[in-house]
Structure formats: C-alpha cells, structure tokens
Image 1 (tube, rainbow, N blue to C red):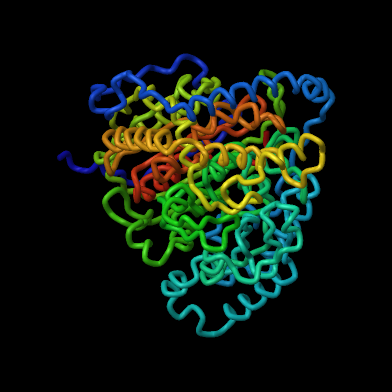
Image 2: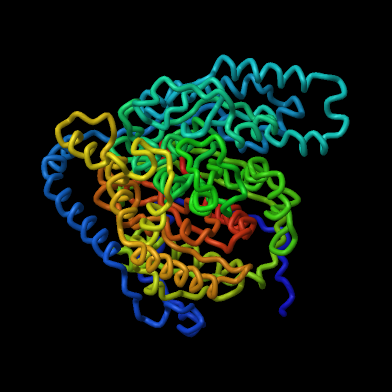
Amino acid sequence: MDKPTIFSKRNVSTEGKNTDNLLKEHNSEAPIHQNGKSSSQLGTLADGHQPKLSLYAKSLRVTVYLLIKVLNVAYAPVFLYRMFQTRSKCSPVTDPILRIPAVDLARKIRRKELSAEEVLKAYISRINEVNPMLNAIVESRFEEALEDARQVDAKVSANNFLEDEAAIEQDYPLLGVPITIKGSLAVKGLKHTGGSVIRKDHKAELDADVVSLVRKAGAIPLLVSNTPELCMSLETTNKLIGTTKNPHDTTRTCGGSSGGEASLLAAGASVIGIGSDVAGSLRLPAHYCGIWGHKPTPGTVSSTGHYPSCNQYEEWTRAFTVGPMVRYATDLKTFLRVIAKPEQVEKLDLDGKPNCRKPRKKHFDVKFGKASSTPANKVSICTVKLLVSYILYVDLKKIKIYYSEHEDYYWRTPNQHCRNAVNKVVDHLRNVCGSEPQKIDAHFSQNVPDLSAIDLLSIEGIEDCFDGNGNGALTELMKYATFRSQHTFMLIMCGVLRKTLINSPQKSRDKVKNIVNKVRKAFDSMLGEDDILIVPSFPTEAQKHGDVLRSIICIGYLSIFNLLGYPVTNCPVGVTSDGLPVGVQIVSRPYGDKITLTLAEELEASFGGWIEPSDI
C-alpha cells in the first residue's frame, strides 16, 4: 500500500475573491472523469437492468406524478401573486461575538476573555432582531438561560477553576455556549408540540437525551425552533406558529423539517443547534440556508425525547437520526462527540488516526469589507476575507473519491448551480488529495425515491394523529378538502399513503424489501471503509414557499442515505447569482463520520463555508 500523503503547514486565503462567483467558475463544461471501476464492481444492480417494482410501488409513483401535475395547474394564481412579492433578507451581523465558532467561545469563556452572560446577551439580542422576519421560534427561555450563564461565570471565577485546563475542556467542551434546539426535541419546561394543534399546550417534563448531554457539556439551551407538523414536510410550516422563512430571501423556504434551526443559524442568531433527519429533514434545510448539517451513523445519537417517535425501535433508528447543525464546520466533531451516546463515542473515533489527526493549530480571522455593486450580476457583494493557518495531517492515499451528478435518475436533473457545486468540490479534492475522483453511473438507483418512501412508510407504530398506521387519514382528507381539518396536507397524505401500504399484499412489500437490500449491497460493494461519495444535496437551491410539494419526488437525493444507513455531511460551497446557498453531500460508510467531517473542515477552509445573508 502506498505511504500516506502528509500535508505540512498550509496557508489558505480567499481574500479578495467574490463569493458570488465561486460557482460561476464552473459555468463552462467541467471535465468528465472516467470511472475506473467496471460496471460489475458497482454492485448487483449496476448492469443497466432495473428490477421490476411491485404494483404498490408503481401506483405510488403514478399517484405522486398526477399530484404534481394537478399542483402545477393549481399554482397558476400563485405564480401571478409572486410577481408582486418583495424579497427581504436579514440585517448584517454587527456584534463580533456572533462571529466566533462555538469551540472558541467555550475557550474564551473558560479563560475569562468573555463572560457567558455577555455571549448570551449578544445572541438574545440577535434573535430578537431577526425573528420577527424569520418566524423561527416556538418558545424561548431567555431569562432562565441568562441565569444559567451567570452560574457559569461564577464557576469560572473560582480561583482554582483552570488548574487543569485540559480536564476542564474535556468535561465542558461547550461551556457557556448558547444552543438552539429543534422543537421536536424535548427541553424541560418548554413547549413540545411537534407543530401539532392537538398538542398546543403540551410542555416537556424532561429533557431529551441529547439536550441532557449538551447541558452536561456546559451548553445553555436558548429556545426550541419551529418544525412542520410532526416533521412531515419539506417546508417548515404548521397551524400553530406559521411558516418559517429563509434568511437569504424571505420569499423562499428554509426547508424542513429542521427549518427553524437552519434559519436561525444562517441568520447568525445561533452558532450550534440540534436537528433530526428521517428523509433529509436535517440536510435539506442546511442546503437551502447555507450551513453545515450532519446526519450521523444510525444509532450513534439517542432519539429518546423526540416527538414523533416510534415503538418499532430498530426499524425507526435505522432510518431516523438526530444530528448537529452548525454555522462553522470546525464545531462539528466536538459537537457530535458531545451528543453521541457514551458507548458510541469510541466507535466514532473522531480523534482517530486512520484518516486524520486533530489539527494542532487553527486560527480564523474573518473580516468583512464594505458592500459593493458588481455590474455583471447586479448583486451587492461584501468581500469576505478568510485567512486560515493550520497544520493538517491527512492520510489521503486511503481515501477514494467517487461522485455523481445524479443526472435525471431521480426524475429531475440538478440545475447548473448544483452540478457546478459537485464539480467544484471534486476538482478541489483532486488537487488536495492527489488522487483521481471517479464518476459513477448511478442509473441502478433510479427507483430509490419510491423505495425509500415505501421503506419509511412501512415502519408501523410511528406517532401521528392516525394511530401510527394511517387509520382515519381518508376521513381527515375529506375534512381538509372542506376546510375543517386541524392538520396540514402533508401529514394527512403521509397517513393516507401509510394506510394503503399497510393494506397492500405482503408479497408486494417483501418484493420491495428485496430490492432495497440489493440497492444497499450495490452501494456497499462500491464504497470501502475509507471511501467517500460526493453528490448534490438537492436538484435546486431554496425554492419559493410551497414549491417543495411540486418537487417531492426529488427527496430521493436525500432519503437514499437514510435507506442505506450512511453518515452524510451537507457542505455549503457557494452561492448562485441570486445569492442563494448551494451545497453538496459528502457520504461515507457507517462509522466513517470522521472522514466526512474532516473533509467538511477542508472545504470550509478553502471556500469559506457559511455566507452571511446580508453579504449577498
């Protein structure tokens, strides 16, 4: 085996670069890299022949197709209305405290360079400033959080507090850092409604497991953020709080179901947050809002305290994960280590040596100049100066890079911005890693949207308003059609589909499971333990409010990795000409989280990561 490629000190600077043109550099046709593997090496489904879907799968596809066609007709008045909409975006971040990564905030608080109280006050002020525009909060605990901060400061003020700083850092890696929590996770004393009217007065009596862990690590919960009803939508809207907006453009969605978290993080109103992912519901909002989001290896992070939940524990935890959402990629490893189950931390090996060593020195100096107008695209740009100096050791010879633009396999070809984002990352990693990325033919996975939807809907006992099996969904649909339902359309449709699936022949369901296993084996045969796959996060940037319904079949871009049980990191790598973020997904085999998170840090150092909405 070749010896590892060792990188010594690298100085990376993007000073003077126009971030709006980061993706435009790839407007010309990117070189096509030939895949070194034969089709037989890509797995049992890579022979160009598609397995025949069951009757239910075919009927599901036809139903969704017809629904999309009906929506396109019904949207005619909406298109007219949008002609008169005014686009707004969040105000600039002015407080320098808000620009400090979480791990650096904790260090400054430990060393008395900042007080936890002044950090909390800075974030509370920012939240109060932007939330009237974003509508991202279910309920806050600002006064209690400030009292928690004062207790942290009192603890830090003790004379012997830093006698062993390394031990303090190990025990309290997030000391005094404010954190926001997705509203589907329980925070003691705060509303825990799941966006449902029937739970509007429900308060959490205990913290969810992950909330207990972040408190133990020294973090201070600030609020619970908005979600779709029971997390059953790609857009964050419900009948309790309303619709949460994208801070880059209020006429566009922030995605769902972790949309409230993504919106606050992108607006600079949070630095770290906790989301959840069952079919891309953590990664889609991260992509739409331009932040970092990680879907961990299934089972590594506890979902206890999440609503909705499921009594089929093994099936549920295979598809559903709780994970970190952050503004700075450098916080991902520390954050995941904090929220992971204690018995899983060693398996994740986030400080392990096989692929990387923890950077010895890392320093960020972020400066923002005055906004200027660029005649070419007529977009106001704020020059971003990101200077990174660090020592990074990576065993790159072990990592093989595969990529796919997905083309039209999932019913909708990614637009030019999303394809360019993939090629941009691939080209960068070719130069950094010194190995030739291999483009794969993903044609054998074109039925994944149908398969992953059926796989998820087949899980019985998921908490919803229809007893977990869809009973009563058809009646509720009739109520919705006559404006009498308390529930949202997406939740009702999920109930209808689950009811019809459960009533489908067992032979048909077994056939789908067989195909799913073949797809899983095909991917497993392609990706080794140290390999990664780079794919688009979604075929488009953030869409107008309501348009995700017309793109529901595109959920296959995300749900395929819930189906496979792979860890995935969404990485923002630039913006479109309209100033909307675009990201890619970096995928690895189970317990390869450390690989995707390390590469996320590399991309942040090279491309800048989070783009402030006001700088567009």
